[in-house]
Length: 201
Image (cartoon, rainbow, N blue to C red; front, side, top):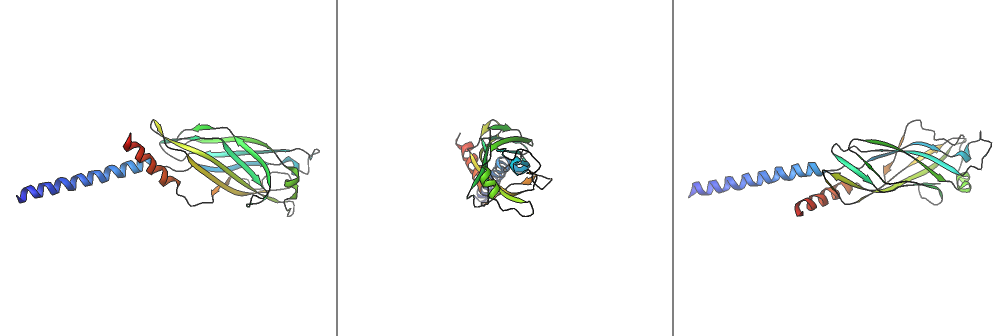
């Protein structure tokens, strides 16, 4: 009788241990990381004092999007960039949009975008020795591709200040990393949602 009880306990413990390892493996497999976003180039011709045509209403920028996931692709919806006079987003200088696209795992992409700038708002941004600071806000939704299926959409919103000099170009020579302004909870939600979808289907 005791041998039977001991065998049942061993089987039960083995089952629980195996289930735990399986759950850990699935969690590691389904865990996702948000793409890294940065502003590589930023140019407002209307602020370029060397130009003969200060009425150029374009705003040109280059985004760098990096998928750091080793085995998961990312499907981006349209990437929307709003340039404002401050982080409060009181007045919009320009809006830029990049079409939706797919990015493979461990891939990097540079996307060029052009928008129409509000010259009045741009010129009213306080100038400090020819330097002006703009707030760049990026928003999009992504789906992560795990093997042959996609997760549900996950919203991303990041931003950063960009300092522009008297030539209309950003001061920083390196890319400016856009950071999230909200607590990071999306990855956990994506993992749990993906796990439930996998178990159900």
